[in-house]
Length: 123
Image (cartoon, rainbow, N blue to C red):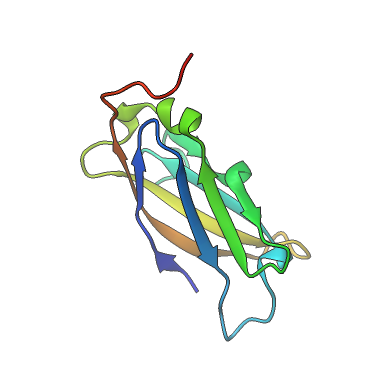
């Protein structure tokens, strides 16, 4: 069920992406799952956490879509050293609300950060 999508983040810019839940083999929607997602420096659960994405997802009322919104303040605060030229790594798991031991990788990929040269967020 997993797919690949690379996050292209720009420091100081709001990032938005909507993911659709469509799997002919599974009956249900995003409402049946808890979304767990993170960006890490390396492809490892022990690597430095660059950004916790879990709280940045919202699910539509019908459960057909989940939207990730990373606010400008969050992208402005990212540590660019965690995003080397070849990119950091991210993934998104769907954890069954009725069976927390049942988790499926929904999306994964690289995460790139384009560093800002203009300060867009007022401190």
